[in-house]
Length: 188
Image (cartoon, rainbow, N blue to C red):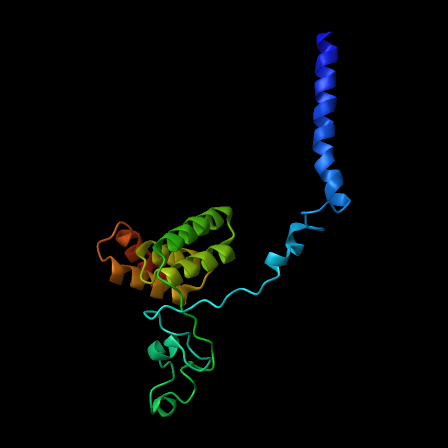
């Protein structure tokens, strides 16, 4: 009997829920036809809001606050005469690299890998890149000099060993650099 009572209550509840839905579809009095957005109160135009007296009115299109802080980026007067080639040396593009010692250290690390693998061209590239991100880096300069010596570019190797000694006269690799300079004096 309990099951029958429960079933009867469920059916009665279902009938009660469908009755209002049916009356809406049939146009029952007092209910608005269609979805809620078609209610006449929603079709009214919004009332104009008054702008408080303490607020400034919006700016016009030609008036901007950024005009007050605009920075002049044009070249100084007479700069074109001082630099007729546009600031470029021999029409080459001057590249500016940021100071990034961590990137330089990573380039040296990768250069060491290539050097040990015998890929001296790739090692040269990495050591040079390290010097772009951290100029006058003693480790990169010394390793570049060693790699240049391996590739038989003796003139630049001498220059780089000299640069290393200029950076760290008594550095950890100063003895090797001095020996290399003596050795390279005999090379053409």
